[in-house]
Length: 181
Ligand SMILES: Cc1cn([C@H]2C[C@H](O)[C@@H](COP(=O)(O)OP(=O)(O)O[C@H]3O[C@H](C)C(=O)[C@H](O)[C@H]3O)O2)c(=O)[nH]c1=O
Image 1 (cartoon, rainbow, N blue to C red):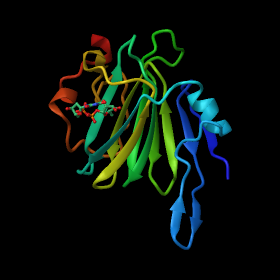
Image 2: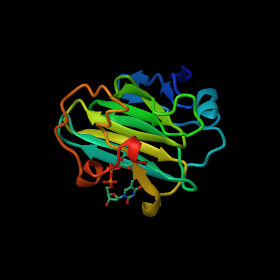
Image 3: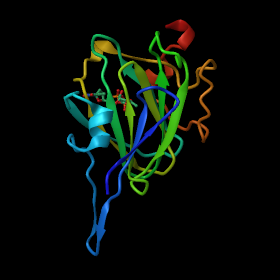
Image 4: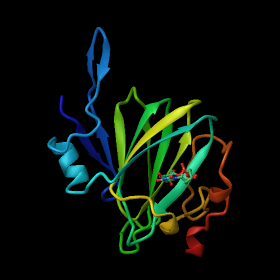
């Protein structure tokens, strides 16, 4: 079954929904296939420069909202391998009609979905099930000096996180508000 591509209200922020191949042994999923139309349309001719995994244990924990500043902007394709997360993209492209808007999608292995966060959009997520694990495909390499982001609780964004925030890194606590960018 082909992967379905679902657009959101933010240009370039796309949900990809796949159909795992199930049999008596378990399941098999095409997590990325450059020649499949949905992936070709979503990822285009970007390269896969880096693949990351992260595990976040506590329900309610938030990571983000992060992006790399130009010229190190990168796209991310994010998939939940274990547990369940509420995944958020925030449009920070100055010239975008949806600047300052956010979109969220629940990711889980059961839903077999992934979220594409394009260059210029910040990414973050909240853990809905303990010990949730994410897989990231990055179109660019990590450049620590280019790392930036905005506060998860920015009043201008008013992101409707589903749970009370239970854990946050010191770095994320110190991120600026949109008004401070
Ligand atoms: C992103 C990254 C980090 N690191 C090192 C830096 C730290 O020593 C450690 C944890 O990094 P950090 O606290 O930035 O991890 P997260 O808070 O999960 O950040 C990520 O989570 C948000 C939601 C994202 O979208 C990005 O993928 C990324 O910013 O891994 C690396 O070695 N390579 C990397 O590519």
